[in-house]
Amino acid sequence: MPGQPNIYSVILEIFNNLNRPLSAIEITKLLLTQKLSPNKSTIYRAILKLESNGLISQIDFVDGTKRYELVDLNHQHHHLICEKCGKLVCLDLDDSLNEIILELEKQTRFKVKTGRVDFFGLCDKCSNK
Image (cartoon, rainbow, N blue to C red):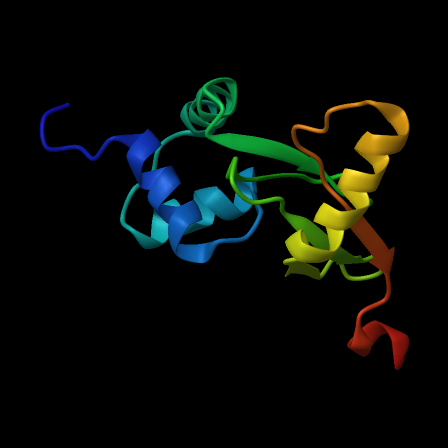
C-alpha cells in the first residue's frame, strides 16, 4: 500500500536501534509501539526473508526461544546468557578471540570465516536468590 512503511526496513531499523537479539514476539511488540500491526505471518515471512538474504541470523538459546540479530561480517558477536531468567548480555571479545582463532587455524589448517561463543550461567540477580 502507498504510504505504508516497508516492513523489512522497519524491522532492520529496530535491530539497528536496539543492537541486541530479538524474538519474533519482541519484534511484534516493537512494531505495535510504532503504530504498525502486521499479522503474525507477515512478521515471520519478513524474518525469514531477512535471514535468507543474510541480513539477520537466528540464535537458539537454552529457553527454546528463537532470537535473531543483525549480521555484521566485520564483527563477531558473543553472549552471556542466564539459564534461569534468560537475560542476555552481548560481549565484544574480538581482540582476545582473534589470537585463539589464529592459533586454531595454524594448528588445524582450517580457515575460520565466522563463529559465535555463548557462555551460559546465572546473572547477578539469579545467582543471589
